[in-house]
Length: 113
Length: 114
Image (cartoon, rainbow over all chains, first blue to last red; front, side, top):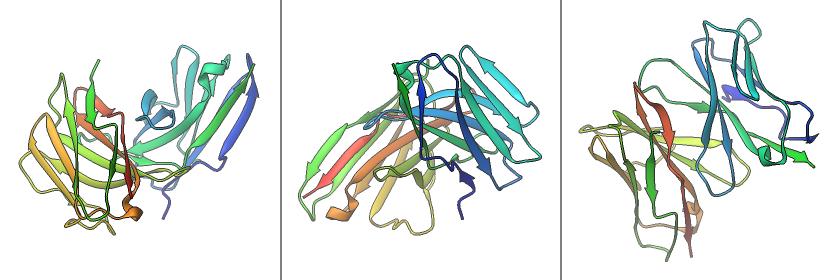
């Protein structure tokens, strides 16, 4: 049972444009969501997170939107840069300390110069 | 910022031997450590969760006698792959968690069993 799904395995955008990565979840108990960036043969790097009490969180070029009723979240990157090319994972958890993260399958983002 | 050191970053071993992977939180105490496994082009799959001083909790389908986890202190957890076989070849990643820091990942270990 895949509780966190990223339906797009890949996304290609032009430098300077907006990248939108999507994520859906099924478990309504999840109340904390995170986005990670990962390069091959490296551990994930934390990008941005959002608590279920919010519907938007912004940090520089990265904005995460949460639609609880649709159980959907998205990561917007604007403007996209070639250095953003990586695999992006969304993850969901309970905000309780020590709770496990459940990851989506990941989306390979390619930003073309 | 919080740093988790994981080593080795890569290891090649012969089939039937055991391999130990270490995960250390360098500047914070991790109440919980998680071990993940990632196959190429797939998601990170949680293998087990460990809390300092107690036995690890393994996910369904993960053999606890094959993947030995020791969480000896608040800053160190080890994963030992015992009697490794080629199908154990994968990318293993640890993550340390604390209430103050959240989740921090190690850099991963590429295990190749030949």
